[in-house]
Image 1 (cartoon, one colour):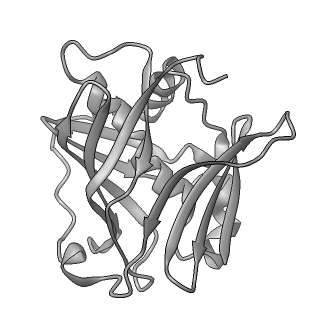
Image 2: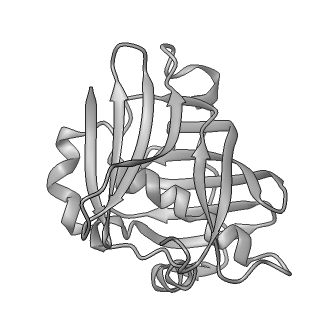
Amino acid sequence: DFCLSRGLGDVYKRQQVEEADGTLRISSRTLMQREDWVQHVVARLPGEARGVLLDTRAPALPARPADFTGEQHLAMTCAVGLNYGPAYQTVAAAWVEGERVLAQLVVPAAIEHELASLHLHPALLDGAFQLITELLASRQGHDDGLAFIPVKLGRIAFTNAGGVPVLAEVRQRKRTAHSLLVDFTLFDASGAAVLAIKDAVSYTHLRAHETG
């Protein structure tokens, strides 16, 4: 098994890949209590981990100033009860265009020394997940105090030949009262796609401060 465990405020998040069949599991638990890991995501990484899902180039950023700075992003996530420590503060700027969010990603100093030993640092992937906050906040009538977390991933394509992700693209495909269907793509500095999650990324909402 390949396992990563990182601190997120007062929560540890673990990402585990089983080499035998490519099963990906994402779990978390609090630091202050002795408790079992709570599993949030189970997905399967296909053997053909590149294919057509990565056959795309990075989109150009809008010419206008960013709609959200890194500081504004952190304030918004905090407002819905998602408190990210220094290692997970990877969103530098974000632009919202209808059902899509584009964001520049940065590598925090706290994780720089870990990059060489990982194909993809979990904090950079999590930065893309965090952009759901901007996607919801940009729409009229969005639900204040609600956070959406990943519960199921659909098709995943990944290449270890790419560089460190510097750009994230998030597209909303469908929304209901209690869930979202979203696509994620991460791009490196050359514009190549290094990770794509498609079709079945579902989110369910938790009201801020009611996570127990």
